[in-house]
Amino acid sequence: MSVIIRLTFPSGRYHATPWGRHVNEGVPEWPPSPWRLLRALVAVWRRNCPDISATQVRRILGPLAHPPRFQLPPHRVAHTRHYMPWEKKGPADRTLVFDTFVAVGRRDPLFIGWPETDISGDDRAALSRLLGNLAYFGRAEGWVLADLFADIAPLPLGPAEPNDPNPVPVLCPDPVTTFGDEHYPTPDPKKTAKGNPSPSDLLFDCPRWHLCLDTEIISSRKWSIVPGTKWVNYTRPSETRAVPARQNPVRQRARSVARFALDGPVLPLVTETLPLAEELRHELLRSCNRLARRKDPELADADIWPRSPAFWGKDEQGTPRKGHQHAFFLPADEDGDGRLDHLTVYAPMGFNELEVMALDRLRKLPGRDGDALRLLLVGLGGLGDFRARLIEESAAWVSTTPFLVTRHMKPRGRKRDPRAFFDALDGRMQFVRQVLVEELQRRGLFQEGMEIDPVPHVGRHRLRSIQFRLNRRKAGDDGGSRPHGLFRLRFPRPVTGPIALGHSCHLGLGLFGALVT
Image 1 (cartoon, rainbow, N blue to C red):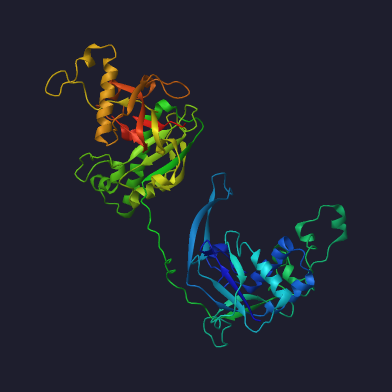
Image 2: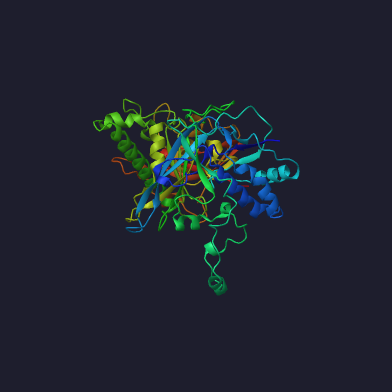
């Protein structure tokens, strides 16, 4: 019965560099090397199936040493670029590395077959077991599912004709020498006796086959060709420009939430929420400015800001947006130690491509004492993609930062406030509570029967609202002189955060956190 091996790559990538090529040349191995496949099966045998005898493995792999035929899935060559630590010139030195791979459909199989080979009975069952234990093929990130497949139509890709003008060389086992041992190293008794042998001296848990030669030995001997192999020219496969779409394509979810972890020598205090949120917004706007000018250096500021509407918070005419659909910049203390450790950027209107690029490139914020605060983007998606106290679903919420009123008390006129706001000892707090109710109603969050109670302090450190920075940096801001307070909200029905209300709510003030019960 012929041998047809089916390989499927769940990650949609096959990572492997052809023998004799450097990884930064950007040339992937395609089709996969039969020599690599047989070595992978030997590794699986020694690690996962040692009960299979060497004689049986030799009997199974011997027929597979002949050049196979392929049926390749639709594919294309792609790469990513990474700046990796090198430290040749110092701790901050980086070197550019290309990660080239072949992109395939995650469910599209690749077939490798030996139509003239007959393996059956116990040998076929052992080969099926070896394939079932094969977890990756090529580099470790090249996850693979392998199994034996029933006979299919003739495999179209095979060795090239002698007059083929543009074949692709594929490293294959040489059936005559692959199980030979004339180039296999002989152990040095003196080194072994010392008890500190090198890795090249520990090859004796494998049969003395060229197929089992260690890569370190192959590289150190500088052989012109790897013992036990031969190059076979195959018909060059044509690259498919696009991998076919999945049968049930999933619609991309809107990106409206970005979550950052904050790190630095000294994290800012919770009372510094407003200054940190301002710095976060300014840094994202500066990044959008740089990215836009990179494509068009002649752009004026008035042309750039409308390109990042969620961060800017204004329309194309420069008028502040209404409806609170633009971004909220929300620093938070999520471990309760009194210092800010996470940043959440939430824009109900969603982020456009320019804003996503700015979020992705955000790495640090200038510190107030000269030490930069480092940021790590831990997630970008929708509200349902994250779990945090600010965006939970809960019926009970409590202030994490002070709520500032959005208007002044009105002693006269048709909409004047009750006299108690001016005369009672707690009149100022009654006024703040009334404005909070108005804000809840405007946002559509107010529920009949809900409880709104002032609280004197919040957090493990019992912070009062007067301890927070309430003034913005912009000229004329009067946040510090506005009435403010801390509250506990109890809704009859659970609501989903974030809940940020009042003056400077887009910069972290008036923020509520879910009460964990």
